[in-house]
Image 1 (cartoon, helix red, strand yellow):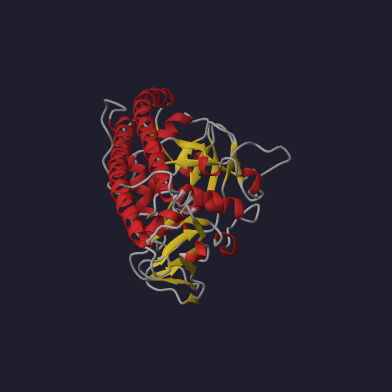
Image 2 (image 1 turned 90 degrees about the horizontal axis):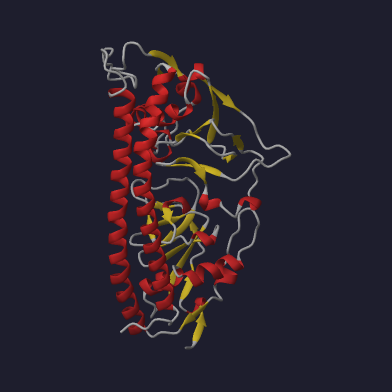
Length: 393
């Protein structure tokens, strides 16, 4: 099959304009899906690239993330996003699938420059070889991929709902075990504004700042390990999106977290952004690490702060204009009331929850594996079709 460079079917929109009401930043684009995140998108004051319906957006920063989107309205794109405008005779959907193919992402990654923040520029990307299909064939390809990827996306959406349901189930179990089933004796009066409302009378009460001491340890001579993050369910774990990229990231401003320490993503506390680490590694500047006093069982602390009661509490005290970037300050966190059961009860509660959440985690792992297979199928299908490996009837 004959090929032609990308510039024959698309041009780069290079003019910068004042930001419109609808704005798209790189963080708003979901890797490998051609979709934007749900909810409110980013807002910025800097000029951006004006796009119109039918334009294709592609994230040029770290192009291996494969972030792309077919614009369905007018708006402005952030500085790390290319805007490609289809030439006459080019189906915008076909161009989207070309840009969303694995071949294009790999080409862009190979052509990118920069170690810490690799970027792909148009002067290289414009030479990407595209199969020369006529307009009717492009439409047929786009129609086929719309149907097939639409079916896959529908299954992915159902899996996302299942994951959300499993998360909710885990938090309900945690909340009941920590607050409701901890003791048979009389509970204290409920205060709807306190996360420790209704705890057993024999439990003590403390504040976060009394028993959790911030660690400011930073990079030393001996690298402590991989980059870590907090997942919505599993807590502190390897940041797989940065795996293999650590050598290109400046960690001089990153804190170090040690096993048994509490890691907190201060911009994500209202989504379960707290967890006790079993690993040693780096955490980004948005995180804080805390030593836990010996009055607490670390596993109990992990489950306590990931219960729905504390997630709701952190959501109520977080500040910030944007819902997806609200922060809990260190001062407010230190004043947070914390229940302090006898250590034996903490261990019993932690044992019970370790067993219960392990079952949920096993189910989440199976769902995550299925999602990975579907995303793999989606990416492979797009690549096979736009490169002519798979014919469309």
